[in-house]
Every structure is written in structure tokens, then in C-alpha cells.
Length: 368
Length: 146
Image (cartoon, rainbow over all chains, first blue to last red):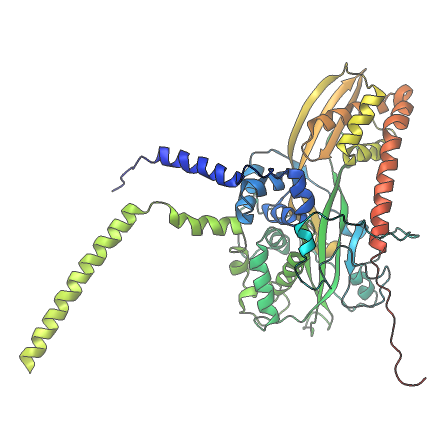
């Protein structure tokens, strides 16, 4: 039987009003501006854009503020917003080889052409809390060194490819490019669909899976071949113009993992690759994505499978934190009728159980 | 119909800082008697990357894009830019329409495009120089005797 229950409108309205009050906090303090969030909590904004799968700094900042800093709630808000917009089309693939580099490192070659460019990194900081940041001390601008050659550096993968020691950039057969926002997720999925899922996947979940492969659950012997962060141009083909329209630039993080591979009947021993590409400055996520991409290729490369990070359905159907939070948090919703049914069932089972125990005891007593 | 520099001009307009573009447009006193063919509209473009950086395309995520089209003395101007700035889209579309008029192209070049190009080059150079200052110079510790 389905019983409709109404009520609580007043409580809900007051709860939302209270939420707005708590969100604003102490009125003696100035409200945070979106521009302040964009500028000073930039990596939080980047994460919301990456997992919200929508590149728009101001909207991500608004979502963060509205969500009181709750990342997954902010990501949810951004995902909900994107469904209200119409789609103009698919961009030309961005050329990360043409990136305006802001950081570029390789753990495989010390003296690579173009050099190791650290950029604005947390690496080599001592992770000691800095009390001076509690205030608003004047911060000097970044040091500058003149640049003679502004051309983008070559990729590490291209350097290895010259000797044929590494596999080529991945290819997917056929012209169709998977789009998980338009098609149901079917397994097995092509590498294109997998990468799309991973690009919007939860950083924490992918990080844990990537870590598990390093600890022995589906070992893949990775090296960080190259990580680059910077801006790339976005172009769109439109019917009214006979050239691809430049839309502007977006900042992305790219990670090329290079992994050991002993070879198979089809392929000679060579390095294989895992790929990560994420909106914004998000190196940890890009590295985790690359490790997960590679571990999901275990079957394709004829490697032993069975570890969680190698299970496509396990990884891809659980990496979306909006889906995950929806299903976990729905448990908060009223299940009164369901629970009444369960309660009744448990009472009846208990009655039967007790009756059986009594009978068993009577029989034992009779036997003694 | 496109003139040679149209793509570069549309790129400059799309990437322009909106405060600077607004300022330049006001200084240039652009014509206001335009017919809006397509009012500013914000939508999504799905951004694509390539597997391994250069392989098959895949969808990475979406970006907000705002577009507009205007007509000015028989020339249709279009604008597309990342973000949700409607005013910028309209101003860019007017600039694009004016650029198709050979008699007015030079005015747009001097008053709008040139300052935008200069600002962008300066900002790009600054970033590149800041990044260059973080380049690692390795030195090797020589141990033992030669």
C-alpha cells in the first residue's frame, strides 16, 4: 500500500532560511566575493569545475559559496546548472602540445629539452603552517627571467617514440566518440568513454584506486613521464563561418604516465602509457586518472586482472561523486512505510523463532 | 565571407578582458544602430582532448560559451567566447561586423584589436617569464678524482 504523506512545508522553509543565515555567518564580517574565491581559493574552484564537468570559474565559485565550501554539494550544483543550457557543439580537440606552459616536469629525464619548470607548486614546501598568512602581508610578485624561445617544449612521449620504445598515443576504432552525458554507460567501454568518466570522477576515489595499484593490487610500474599545466586554445566549428572559431583559452593539467610492459605475442617489449587530462590546475587528480586509465587497460594488454582498479565496471560506475552521493544520501529520505513492513516482518520472524525454541526446549526436557 | 585576419581578430576579442574591451569600445565610440540578428545566448560546448595528447579524440567536459550575431550596414558580425558575458558578445559581434567593412577595418584594428593584442602579449610574456624563473638548473656534485 502506498500512503502519501504531506506536511513539513513550514519546517522546510524555515530550515532553508536557517541555512541561508548560517551560510552568511557573522554579519559583522564582510561577505566573501566570488572574485576573491576565484583568485584566492583557485584550486578549490578548479576541483569543482573538473568534477562538476563544467569549465566556468565564476559559476564554480558561486557554487562553492552557496554550498558553504562543501565540495561535492558545489559539484552537484554545477552539474545541475549545466543541464539547463543548450549545447552549441563539440570543440576541436585541444592541442596540449601547443600549451602555454605554466608548469612542466618529468620524473624520467633530468635534462629534457625545455627543462624542468616547477611553476607555482606545493612541492618542496615544508608543509609547515605559515602564521603570516593569517594576516594580509604584502606578497612580492613572482621573479621573472626573460625568455628567448617561447615555442612549446617537445613531449617526453615523443622523445621515447623516436626510439620506438613506447607505444603510440592511444586510438579508438571507428568515427564515433563516446559521450557519457548522452549515452547510457555500457560495459565494456572504449578508452574514450573511460577517460571521459575518469576526467569528471571523484579525486579522492581515483586517488585511492591509483594508490591501491602502487601497493600491489594490480601493479603497473609507473613513472611520471611528464606533467604539464597551462592554457590551451579552444576552437569550435560553426556553420556560419568557414574556419574554426577561437573561443578563448582554458587551463588544464595533463599527465603522461609511462609504464613497464614486458610485451605480448602481438607487441614487443616497450613502455605503455596511461593518460590523465583534467580541467584547471589539478596534478594529483591528473596523476590518479593516468594510473587508473592504465590499470583499466590490463585486459587489453593481456595482463593478469582481478584487482579493483582493473575492474572497469567497479571503477567507472562508482567514480562519479554526484551519483554516489545521490544514492548514499537518499537513505535520509522518508522510508517510513518500507521500514514499517520490515518491522512487522522481523516481529513475525521473532515470534516463529521463539515458538521453535520453546518446542525444541520442550522436546529436550521430555527426552531427559 | 572572411577577411584574412578575421580568425585572429575573433580570437583576440574572445580572449579579451571584459573591462578592457568595454573601455576600448566606449573610447572608439562604436555605432549603436546595429540590428541584433541573434541575441546573446549562453550555451555549452563539449571540450575535446586527445588520448595520450595526440591520439583519438575524447570528451573531457563542458565549457560555458556565449554567442551573438549582429548586422551592420549589410555585414553580419559574429561573436563566440568562453564564459557568460552577454555584453562582451555583443560588442565583439559589432567589432566583427565593422571589420568586414574595408573602410572601417583599420579603425577597429587601431582602436580595438591593436590594444587587445598588446595587452595579451604583455600578459603572456609575463607568465612565460615567471615560469622561466622556476626552471631547474641541475648541477652535478663531482666526487673522487678525475
